[in-house]
Figure 1 (tube, rainbow, N blue to C red):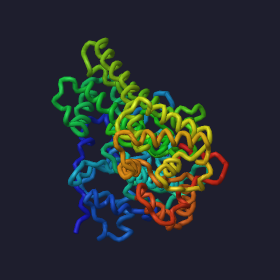
Figure 2: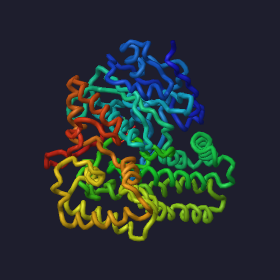
Figure 3: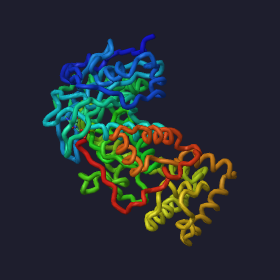
Length: 481
Ligand code: AMP
Ligand code: MG
């Protein structure tokens, strides 16, 4: 029986400027750490006839599957606001695999140097690759669009960061790796024919319903804007902080991409930042919609020559579209928060009810996820926090509001249960399982993944995974991994 690869590599057929044809750099001693069986199934792939050695050879890039045509993609990006030419400096796209339902990019991350490596070594360390595996799979199970993780192998080589670490390669699966930064790269070359090729490619691949539109570029801006609003609202719903929302890390398909210094917020504080290098809080929790709009403005700038021949008109149309962000965002955000509180219909006072709860959470420094668990009658950690007078008064208002629109407890509980996770990847737990995995103990990692696979379901004996860290030390995440 074969594995089931079905490659069709359209991106590698685009003009030379879009990519470099390159193979992964072979590694010394590949060793499989984890293979995602349920994702394999979704991709119609079956590795059960391969022994671990063959699987390790495959996912290290030492032996590429037939039909693959590997490339490093060119892109640019605004990193913390500064424009830079980038590209896959430590990744190769081995091809586009066709499952029965979808076309997926299969990418190796940590696969060696490319033209775009600049001063980097092209490699990745085990901890950060497993971290991406854990968080991306958790996000998927939280019903949030995201790239997925198919496998992690150790390379048998060390990578030098602050210390010497075990090297690893992650296999990333995405609807595509086309980013705002991809458009920025092509736009910077000032060749409108190339820009048009990219526009048509993206529309055909991701948004075929606007293929016949007379205003393709403007429609693309619109649909990407809507996708990004939906995505950020999902992040806000579960308290996810991406940490490095550079334009090269914003996917045109609307998936969460590039899990670097990301983390989940525990105590509710809109200004929460975990990334050690984000000193100004550019990518703080509350700033994510603001930055999404900023990134979309950079995207719109790339599209100007394709929106209208008359530049002034094009700018006017794009600006109007970008300025629709806030209103659309606020409406969708309110609806998301209504869902979290089990509210049906729209009432004028909803906004105040929601904001008053958030203000209380902020003032009393309570856990974001577990507050919603409390409202769904799942007590994670004593009731003490919630005996507070202000909270009790707020709860009375909430109960009054719940009665509107003939809302039965069954009905509103069902709604709340569908959007409020009972468990998230708590930062200290992520660190704990990564420490163990670094010491060759994969049991805690596998157990953690099992729990994170069902975040909306009641599971036995998981309190330990639901509690915030007892440490007062501020959690920090790091880039350059
Ligand atoms: P990221 O912060 O992961 O979005 O990466 C930003 C840019 O740096 C991308 O062009 C990456 O390919 C590149 N990069 C990150 N780490 C390395 C590395 N170890 N070697 C080469 N390039 C890298
Ligand atoms: Mg990136």
